[in-house]
Structure formats: C-alpha cells, structure tokens
Amino acid sequence: MLMDVSRYQAWRSRKLSRGTGLPPDPVIRIHNPGSLSARERQSLRESVARAGFAIYALPQDAESRTEACIAERLVSLCRQVGLTDAVSNPAADDDGISRIEAVPATPVAGARDRARYIPYSSQRLNWHTDGYYYPDSRRVRSFALHCVRDAGSGGDNRLLDGEMLYLLLRDHCPRLAAALCHPEAMTIPGDRGAGGSGRATFRGPVFEIDPLTGALYTRYTRRRHHIGWRDDAATREALAFLGELLDSDHPAITRWRLSPGEGLLCNNVLHCRTTFTDREEPGRGRLFYRLRFHQRIDTGEAGW
Image (cartoon, rainbow, N blue to C red; front, side, top):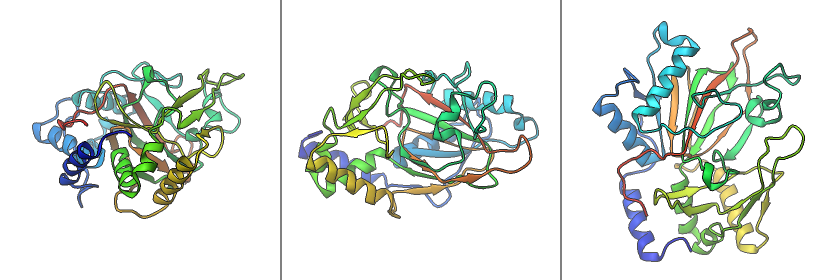
C-alpha cells in the first residue's frame, strides 16, 4: 500500500481543496518569457498545483515566429520556473529540445531513428506519461510541449493529472491502487536491436513516492504491444478501471488543441494525441518542441 488511510485522507483533502481541472479561461499569457512577472509565475504554479499542468501563450510578434527565437524563448520560460536539467534524448538538440513532427515513411537524413516511433508520425498517440520506460537515473518529472505550427486538422491532446488518476483509483478500490504500486507491476522490454534506442528492459510500479521530491510519481502507458503487466487479478482489474476512465468524458480529463504560440508546462501528466492531417504546403506541417526535465515544477505544495 502506498500510504496509510489517515495520511491518504489528509493528502486527498488538501488536493481537492484546491479544485481540479482548469478554470474557464485557462490560458496564461506571458509577456516576456525571459522575465516572468510575479503574477505570471504564480499563475503557472497555481495551475500546475490544481490540474498538474498549465497552458501558456507566448508573444506572437514577427520576431518571435522564427524557430530559433521560439526555441530560445521556450528554454528561457522553463528556466523561469526552475526547469534547467534537461533529460538527454538522442533526437534532441544541445538545449534538450526535440522536434515532434511527422517524418516521412522513407526517412531523410537524420530522421531514420525517429521514423520508428509513433510520436514522429501523424497517427494517434495513446495515453502515456513521458519516459515511463526510463530508469530512475533518467526519471522525467516534468516536460514542456510548445506548438510551433499546428496541423491542418486534428492533433488534439487529452490530459489527466497522475495524482488525480491515483485518487480516483484509490477511492474506487484501495486494493487495486495497491496492485499498481507493486515494484514489478509494469515491464517494458528493452530496445537493443539493430536500429533501436539501446534502452534496457524496465520494471517498475505505476504509482510510487518519488524519493527525491516526496511527491507522487506516475508511470503509465496504454500501449498494446511490447509491454508486460504483472499477471494477477488485481492488476488486471485495475488496468480495466483505468481503461474505462481514460475512454470516458470524466471532468478531470481536459481536451485541448494547442495553437501556434501556445504550450504546456506540466509535472509529467498523462496525455494522448488524436490523429492529424498536415497541411500540404512544404514546411507547414505540424511541429512541436518538447523539453523533458529531471526536476519537478515546484508548486509550493506539501508532498505526501
């Protein structure tokens, strides 16, 4: 069991007292990502504390539309909320930024490795947390996702706070929550074959207390293949409950389609993406910048 009943109830009360989900007008407009105002910084922290993520919009003046400027402003914004230690990624640049875009089926130079993976396609991307297959030394505690160009159609995101997912599961049945806290609840096979990423096999829980931050940490993927789950009745029942929840219109789940200049800062919430269709003009396809970090966004809230 992750936490005794009295401590869980105290944590649950604190979390629900903040409210859940986003307010009616959720976009936090940032005037200068290199020098956040106290109000902007506080708004970002409050949104992350409440929903697990914040949606922001950066200035869209002529200068800001160049990809180099967008990348610089994104890195600066992340630094302003304490995110400085990027998680390395073979597809990322020196700042840790990965270009998330559909690469051709017959990949061009530099895109060969990315073409193997669903995020670098126009296909539907199922529910997951980032880096769920990484060992503890590379744990992804937060990430930024910024829209440089949106798709012609589709490409919507759905978002769910991992803390809320645990709360809903535990309220439904503590025994099922405990099953997903087992240290071998989830197994991701390694990817060491020819052309693979070199990733080793990973085994771990879905929910655990992060020893570094004292906060709840969630690893999850709804992938259908190349995953093993602990073979017991409670785990199967817990996964069935999560599947039904994620397919529902539960009010804790947010649907959002990021527009150019908008982005997401989060403590590695669960997310998915619908299929999309790119615009036909060359160089106008859907493009997002992603930065993953070892740090968690500090919301000033007490841990578990």
